Image 1: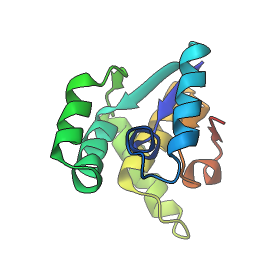
Image 2 (image 1 turned 90 degrees about the vertical axis):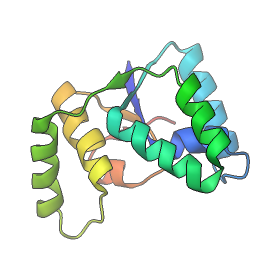
Image 3 (image 1 turned 180 degrees about the horizontal axis):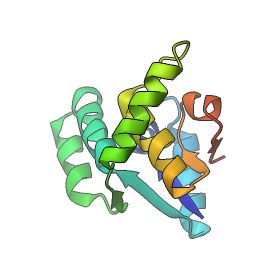
Image 4 (image 1 turned 90 degrees about the horizontal axis):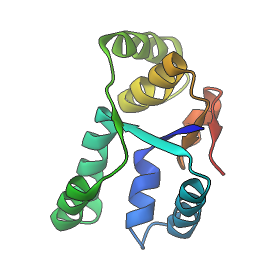
Length: 131
């Protein structure tokens, strides 16, 4: 099973002060034990680096960037076009651009149904959170 990992899950695993830290570590251990194929996108790499930089510090951000072993999928131009459609259609939601490209368009394109995240937007769009 492939699981797309969100910035919220990555940051929670690395930041002991994060309210989801214990749950994130437990879920990451379970995913690895179950040999789930974790993936992220190039957009998640940028978002995670920036989030770690601002919340945890530059050392943690650089260390994660150097040591990340989760395979990176590239968001395509088609994914960006689909994300734009999604963002302009769901006017009652506050989806981010990264979420729309990575989790909605890319997951839709690759038929991935599960994400590792602590954000309700994924369920709002019809995907299942790893739990």
